[in-house]
Image (cartoon, rainbow, N blue to C red):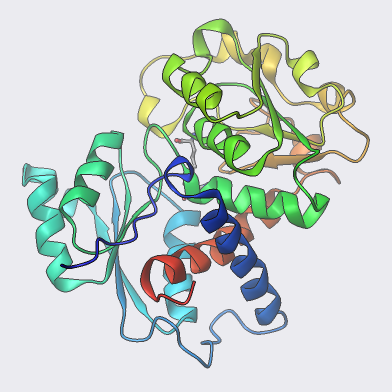
Amino acid sequence: MVASPKHFLDISRAAAEELHRILQAAHEMKAARSGRPQGFIEPDRPLENRILAMIFEKPSTRTRVSFDVAMRQMGGQSMLLSGNDLQLGRGETVADTARVLSRFVDAIMIRTFEQSKLTELAEFATVPVINGLTDATHPCQVMADVMTLQEKKGDLSNLTVAWSGDSNNVTNSWMHAAGCFGFDLRIASPEPLQPASEILDWCKQNNANVTVTEDPQAAVAGADCVVADVWLSIHEEGQGTKHNLLKPYQVNSALMAVAKPDAVFMHCLPAHRGEEVTADVIDGPQSVVFDEAENRLHVQKAILAWCLSGIL
Ligand code: CP
Ligand code: NVA
């Protein structure tokens, strides 16, 4: 019997010990590259002769560049496939796309809209599938965020992370991470934009310490980390505005002042200065947003090694 591929679809779908192993490897890979040029190919070439197909049905800067560089640094190659240029964009089924790509490449990373497209791709692919963001979740981002939190704060179990703004795909992956890594997560969102009942149920079933409030000050009070994201995600563009509802949730210096004095500020980027976060916060001394962006590379190398090479 052929073993099923090791997909990386969501933080909630991997065992906590596997996620810890991935993070440990990411820290080691980062340390091992210190002082090397970005194009330095690691001598052991763990992904030599491997090809990653990257399907993008939405725009991206960080995800596309970090996955491509990850493959190159590990001795492999990647190819960029825009959704509109594939027959997928003209109605070829996800299942057939999965079966065909599996005959050509060793792994598939996809950024798409509905979560069901990701899961269907994984169902029919015979190679690993990685979630590069859907409308519902963004697990690679939050793995990089958790890695960054470990770098800045060490042990996660006594930490409180506060989210202020729209409850979106990134929030959902933070909720999964709270369940797997044991930190407390407080989410402040206006009532109509709070997390869906399904994911709140998941939190209950998985003992994730997640609380939801309409009060941003209450969420952020004494927090170790404050997180924001855009008020309108890519899949919501052109669907009106939530700005009036979200204005009180802006992360500004007054809100940061109620967090711990050494709290860090996180944002997955891209950011809209003056909307979800003020420039003085995102460009200020508590901001770790570019460490988060860099850690996409290191954590995705570990994810690729876990999915592909059997070395993790
Ligand atoms: N944070 C993130 O995923 O960025 P991109 O949309 O640029 O890939
Ligand atoms: N919530 C954002 C994240 C972008 C990386 C979006 O989906 O557009």
